[in-house]
Length: 351
Image (cartoon, rainbow, N blue to C red; front, side):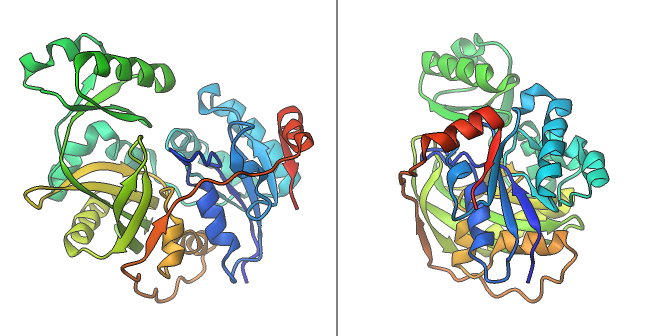
């Protein structure tokens, strides 16, 4: 039985664009092997996962990554003193660069983790995807860095035509059909996530995703693949079905070997009308649909925890194809006193 105290970020379980944290906590809490405690970490007092007693034993707020490394580590040290964290699992793109920089402080506190190196993070940046895809021998739609809104009114002069995808370096993506729509998306993403803003050519087809845990030696463990069946207006999976596709497996394995990735990741591809896989994104964490991994018999957050704790992962069962997930939105009833405790005290015990 594993009984560590595990801190998990990304508790912002919004229906249209959920963070992975609640699903990761659910995978661990529902496993008969896990007898530890879950500390939910969020950035907003309205993050629903901070109040879910069935998945979290305690919950705390962190300062936004924009507040800087010192504010983050000071807050985490206070939480660690109260909860004695053994393991941390980051679940959001924007926080990961800072967490990677802070791994020496994690080591000093005795907090264990499995995260990529700074170099690995840079290699999978969205603006580096064409280079990485070429190295791995797969296709990737053209991506351009944009710093001025005027590009969208003269992009045809540079060979770009609508529709286009306007994306943030960490989060946010909008398919736009005109210069005015593109300008609005550009301003919104820049205001929320800063520069640069990226433009990517649209690929029409079907979206497939693969998630896995990687050990830093070029291997991926416990890969689970799914095909999106329905998406939100932000393009996030609302339902999907587990599959196995050898081409997707081979392409993902080549990407992971190219960067020797360490930690969880998600590979997003589009299968275009010619049957070619086009690399859209590599996300440096578990996806929000990670609970499907438990549903198909490969509980990836549990596999990650075993690796972090230097426990044998054992022989993994085959992932069962043809298993669907269908997301749903539910109301969480929260006493006002608990909400006030999170705001005033920065956290609370739920158990």
